[in-house]
Length: 395
Ligand code: FEO
Image (tube, rainbow, N blue to C red; front, top):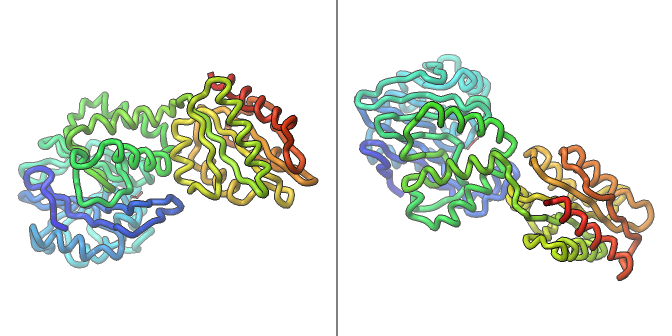
């Protein structure tokens, strides 16, 4: 790969990770990128580094442009290890005059690398530094994705270096949004939002309002993961507005596990009820056949979450516990819910599923349906009616 000029004398110098498949529990089926950027000016600045193990890629790209030792500044927009893993080695090599970071970034760097001797310069929202022909304006973006996160804005180029925000986990040889299929790009961006940023939606809303109020002109957004938004940065800003409002579509998910297909039969009957009542977008998601992060992507714009599990050892199936634990942490909003499940003797699963929905603040729109052992045509009617009741509550 080669360093890519994204604006005059501003370069992508990051690394492609084609083979990673797991990002703390999120299935990144197409790998990812660790984007790092270099601005060559009277002072030369490197914006973020890359994950440990990818230093040679970063160095390979830097050597195409400059001797790394001649870099003056390092800007740490985010301390998470996928961007700072090789920071100590790069600092050792570059010996920068200054390392710019937020106050929370300073704390996080000390707690990660235990190097009080590094030349930190703490910045806050609105602070600027001059590189010569270009200025860097810092904007703190707490919790997008960590407390330390910040953006770096280059006003002369209308360029926003946006750290984790607006990213995608997707390894590609292409660098820009206009070089790939828009539908695939937006699907990756949606999965990233649903699995990384959904719980921080109130922060996203606040930030977008501040950006709008400040009149910041943006014609390119360069995130720390995935493709750079060159043709249409407005598309991802508009998507973040929509996703952060958590506006649901008329879409129902039946998320279930099954032991001997009884709960699966119930799931199908619930789906029939939804369809009969006019809900066209109904998805059955078996918790052991769909990755938790793909289920979460579907949750992003769903209105109804209908959970099904047989009772296993007085509890729910482990794959359902996995999905629901993950989901709760991401705090989905504006949903309605219901529960169902088969059982052999004790039958607690529906109660547990209902409690999980309640703990997420998702109202139950009907009493849960339990069926002992194998459903019969007559008892499945209760599941059809459950689907119908959920459909009515979705409107
Ligand atoms: Fe890409 Fe929060 O790290």
